Image 1: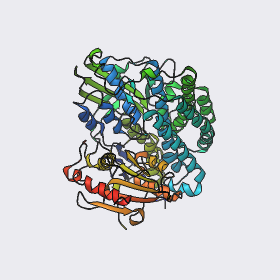
Image 2: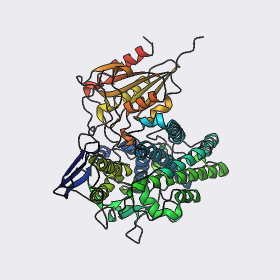
Image 3: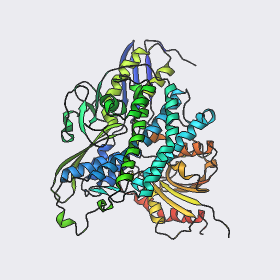
Image 4: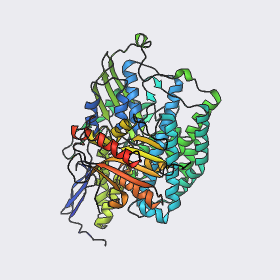
Length: 446
Length: 154
């Protein structure tokens, strides 16, 4: 095939999100050798959710926000719960925090696994989707599905069900794992080490495009741990830490003409969030196993290749696995304090002692795709009056555009197919989230 | 005693997208019914590969989902996988795009031989909203009856 393009003109329009109301596509337009247009567009759904949570009680809002995404439902749920707790000035127990960190690891593992194996691996192996891999690499597909099932089983233990957690509520947990369940999870993780090592071996051999563009990297950071659940916001361009409540000092949202979604920037024209940003910022906080994995994967910080986001995800998978075992071991040794369990709504007895002081609260977490912010204004009657939600995919949009603007001229000599594939791979590397779209079954009868 | 087949009835869709949540709503109604022990219900927002893990434990799987079938809104159709075109796997941009049809195609490729029946419901409105449209809401009893027929209760 290889339809050689003239270097003068090139038009690429990948309408990949056709099922999402036609809003999403990659547009590349070169005229007379000059790059005229080059951008990615996705629909911005969270704005609709902001309207949906208005007028809702703070004790139910996380059930709505967790459905913004089927993959990072725990992330949205916890950003929501943290924003509520911040608004009413509620401090959760250390045990609650630690269990929240554990469920976060499960979600990160599940999401990264999906991305690495089902989106990036087919590109790397030169096949259009995971389907042909069933024939050529059946053991790899089965390994990925096995790991996915195990993460899902463990999520079910912690969250009450696989997606859209029901046990995570403002003030804490409505259910905590038994000793037997903790042991079960530990056994699963230990058994998984072999599959995890195979994953490392596979991604050692995956060849990703050689491309670099330094940008500003933004992530949460914490003095004692690799930050997912808690920390302050920092970037590679500033030498300070910003409290979650002041997130607007970093996340500057603005409208652009070509996109219905807001873009974000800070010190430069764009910034990047996600695994690569986190590893670049917090590498020294990774556990030893993850650092070893980074070495084995030939990953060096700082890394300016956005395609390496997937490798950063694999490194995080190692970190999360061993850190999850550490947390489980902690509870197996110290025991679980079941008196810490709370009801999803304060009981009649609790209400008098439970004063909701209205205010504004911010919840920031690192979800698989990057920094997520929920901000709520809560009334004294425990009702959400206003909401703002900044999702990682939107924060990355400007950065993807600028990556494309640098990448396309560098590969102009290649065929249109190759250029299209590279731009698709670039977008995929960011693991963009479009799940808030309706997933209708598209049926064509034979 | 004859061992009954394990049956899973699963409702799929996002309850935040109006009629897309029809499957989940139908499961909530079914949860109030007395069903045989060999029948499990799953009111899932799972749309993608999460569904695969339930395949080995259930011989028969009944899926209720909003479906674009080119029919009048509110049309309820029961069909098997062999009656429709398999997934073309052309939407691989996002893991979330790994939707029902792709999942079922992958399952079949992997040699999973479950007896799968889909109850497709043509939606009226899939915009953002927590309520089903009145057209689709009125079809819930019909869907529940179809499920009962399929699990041989009727």
